[in-house]
Image (cartoon, rainbow, N blue to C red; front, side):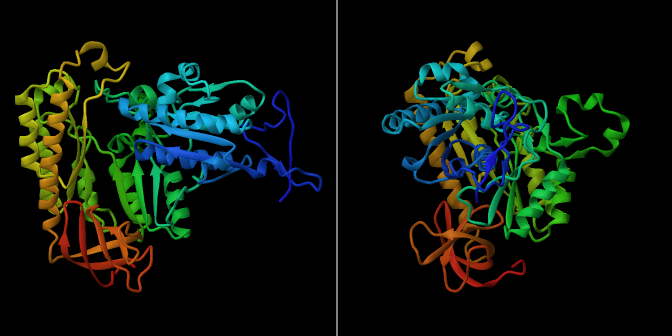
Length: 491
């Protein structure tokens, strides 16, 4: 294919914020041949955002490559939730120094939460970085790259009050053609004292439900079998015609009457796409309603798994974290979920060593875990994040050795509980969506069951994307092992 770029005004290659390619016999292929390398870190939202970035740049002559040495543009989509995540990016940039020296055309950009948090300071500290782009500014990438190619540093970290990318069809990266992420909300209003997300991703705003349904439909046509609805807090989803969630009180009576919350969106997705398996993440205890749980129970294509971060089992620490739930309210929520969906798996986020956490507070977290017995979880040492209320107001007074020991105790207990949960599947039949070849053997498939547990079984004559019934014969704390007994009814 050949083309020529339409030229207008200050930026000779800009047209309505995007590069427009026109057919021409005398056109150049230069932009079409540019290679883009993207690495993503942190939460699933970042990986989803990278697919949006790839889509924006694919319209501007870039195609992705998995070989970093071949790239003319390297983008790192970063996380700021913990200090270690930012240190990983710093070390990665050190490795790119030699690439930059050997390829004078190479450009390097930092995207995501670290870009939003550090802004221009990042360019000052990391000399090899050419552009810094926040989570809401990816549509501006063509303009920023043009600026960089003219020998300037470029930055855009402006946060939006609206859903930014509902009109973009993501370019699925490293896709198995089976699972896909779909973002439904952006930002967070909860202001937990330890968290930078409200500062790096802005206020909560929701996406037009019709654009969500359209994206699922497009994926279904392409053969995808499962979607995960994403947001920093999916239970806060609220569509009343656009705008920030906090502005709902100012909406018209018609808007309020026709507004769509998360339970209604979930039902809309399930009804319109009965052959698509649906997951969602992440939920917040204070915002989860029984309406959502009832919808999950009503539709077989909504998976029975909820990621429900608790962070601590101590009410004293929960209050210091500005979590809007108590330990008792959290336990009651789990009980109500289990009453409606007895086999629903629950996973957690837990932070150890938060400022002021005593041994008694730590013991309360362990006791909470014993009460719930989570299927799996994500556990971390507290990491002080600049700009958060905890960093400004609370002394990081739990020493590193104590944090490490408490984390080890939490992880050890979780492994025990994970094994307890996987053993519950022994001699049971489960439906599995085949996602890939097992990492440990080319002779086995790997997929997940409804409860989000990994299942491994001999390949036989099945294929990626098949729904298969598996008889579970053995397990570890993280994986179920079994044998296929035939295609499921959903295949």
